[in-house]
Length: 150
Image: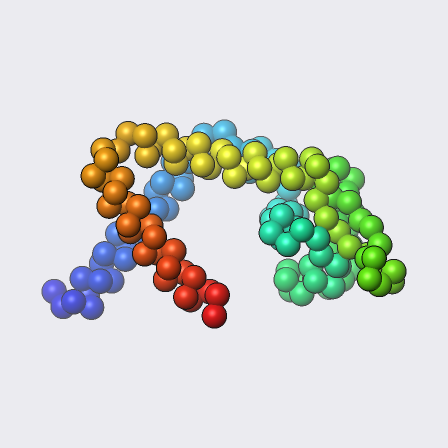
């Protein structure tokens, strides 16, 4: 087996293992799956969580949809109490959307559920394995930073 073939095989096995863990986590009750959000609504909630607030134009650009579509998505998030709209203090013609306290709580609940599953697994690993995993995780993060923060 060539080095290239071995690398491809290792990458395939790693990604299959990660997918399997994802499926295992999905079998347990998660606020992500028990929420009534569509994928686009969840996408908007995640964008707002990362950016603090966004204009309709910003959201339309990130989602690759029309402003009218974004308006409908945001209307439903506002109706569910997960987001609010307000005037942009820099430009009163622009309406900004941000998470409500309930939207922020939902994101925290989703994140915490994933962390709790992962932490439970980590608690069962020996110290040497944790050291190795920590080093590998740092390496993966460094490569991700180089690829996506350039």
